[in-house]
Image (cartoon, rainbow, N blue to C red; front, side, top):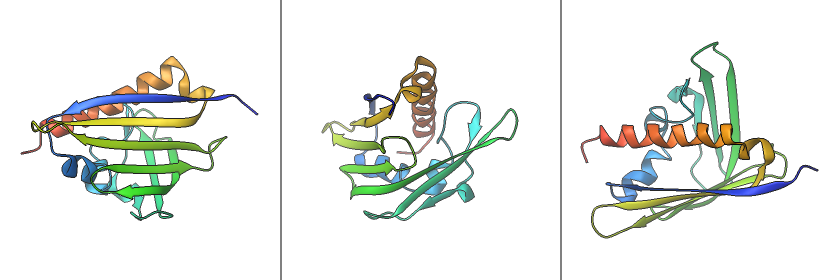
Length: 147
């Protein structure tokens, strides 16, 4: 078995937690930012059954060659607007992602994405940089919303 680890990403957004939670759980929002730079994830490639035990699936498409990558997960926690969690059972070790949305009381929300059972390939500098571009795309998307 490959060694697994954990990763944590933190961002602060000028938006209410309810909006941020909805952005992470609605195909029409997710399609605007899901995936690293150089990919698109059309809304019709996103399946969301927003309940513990429900399916969360996205299929990203490479802008360069049209290749696809599907992420298949099962929701473990749905507590709008505070916490959202899922497990990817097909990833070795069953990678878990938990996102917490903390209202800072001044119009801003801290979003912490914590991943456990993360395989080594997902922890590489390149993989972490790719994930960061997805967070940057989320920032840019939020900046364009009328909040």
